[in-house]
Image (cartoon, rainbow, N blue to C red):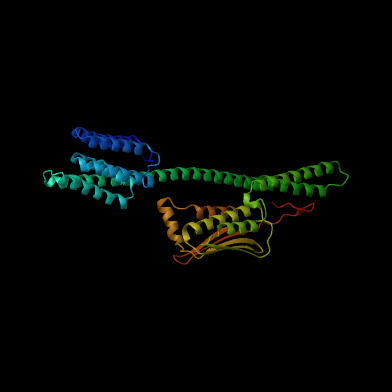
Length: 401
């Protein structure tokens, strides 16, 4: 009779309702045991009730439930016309009507049932007293309050269950995102360490060996050994660079930094936010740590734009100049007070870590990060990195990492 989960409480309530209705029908039949029609109608109503209670199709707010209640009501009215004791069956009927019918139909059905119970009491010539009217009406009021209160508690319980399910799902997604972010951060750290130590060291060794090779006579016994050492250093430098490229962010694996920023702009654009990307100057090949820093800064800045600014438009500009490369991210959002935000982080020890992380990246590469913003005036962020000094060419290959 109900698709809701069978908890111990709901099971006990159903059992009590079944027992109450069957008990009241048995009482009516017992008190009118000499009236065959009353006994038969009480038996018919009990059988009809049992059939509906066991029928899977009888569910709240369905046509089958309405038809079943109408049949029960018709039999009960016939029983009520024959025996005033059937009046008390109205109480369990209240619960059935409120539970199975929509509220806009359940309340009128309860009122009609209470009116029929009071009318039958009068028509059977029973002594009229205030209890004649108060009893059925009070029972109806109790039933309404109980059923509506239970439904409200059930809806609240369902909302809490959905929130808990959503929370569990969100925690799992957050844990997965944190694992992925940690993996990417470690890959970037390893790439930076390999670039700053092994790759640069091998490049220096190669240059020193080339210089030594040029100072030795061609027929000197050591020349061949120096040449082989230089070639081994060159091969290992190429291998180190392959490691650095393999450990770089996935967005940089297929294409240039400009292509990665263009894809980032397209992915971030929504019907409410338009993100445009432009390149200024002549692009030059940048070391992997530079590309990673520029890409991560753009990603973090756009994430802040989406989450906090309410902007309608944002622009990313990658500028190549003679001695530096810069990334500018500008939006027309609500803006903020950078000094107040910095003070709040220092005083509370909390707050976002986006800007501090971006400044740390800039400092690690000898660059600067500036943020210009004011409430209701948008935000402009600029990352500037000095271009690395190019090292001499070696066998047609640029040895700069």
